[in-house]
Image 1 (cartoon, rainbow, N blue to C red):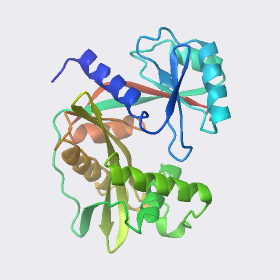
Image 2: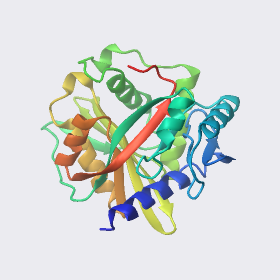
Image 3: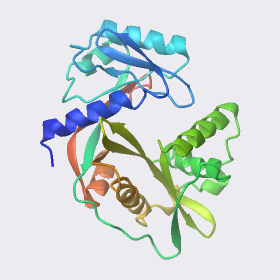
Image 4: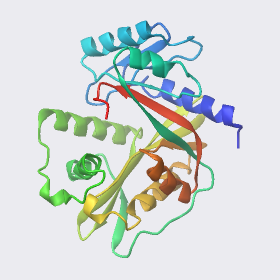
Length: 270
């Protein structure tokens, strides 16, 4: 296993490479600003070797994002860019710090009886329903909402997100899994592999369980399955957890805390 600085360098290289097939990269001071399809946006990030991030850099990046029609957002690793938080707050953004973990000793977990796991194909007609599971779960982080009571989003933006996801699945840039019980999707998640100089790194994202079914180990089982699939080809698998409680769940399935992932946008502060 590489040393901690080596792992962080790999993650930074991953984040720099991930937008390249989808977006043009605008350079603003110490920041790289990807401008591409709003249906699959990327955040601005500090550029390797770009120096200290300033408030002026952040404000210029936000203007580019607004003009390009993509969400206003900045992400960074505080251990690598400790000054970015102050610059983001000075520019009027709300900053949130999340645990950053790496898979070191993954465990193979079994789903409850009656739950089956599938790798999602690009032409799966149920893809919008799988996306609804994630949207409902993230909209009700502490609730017990029933996905079946949530109308399917058929707006143009939702259709564009589904089309972008289909393209990524077809290209192998997103691997999505769904857990199904009694014909209904109950948990979803993805990992997103990126080749960096012949070495593959993958980030686990979007692990979500139907709110009414939380507490059955579905999220942990999904994370375990995604790591197992990713490690068939990837040299490193990592993720950013939503909070410390979620991080502890991932630690129980073989992840270890590495550092912090910071995100900043215009959400109102709590």
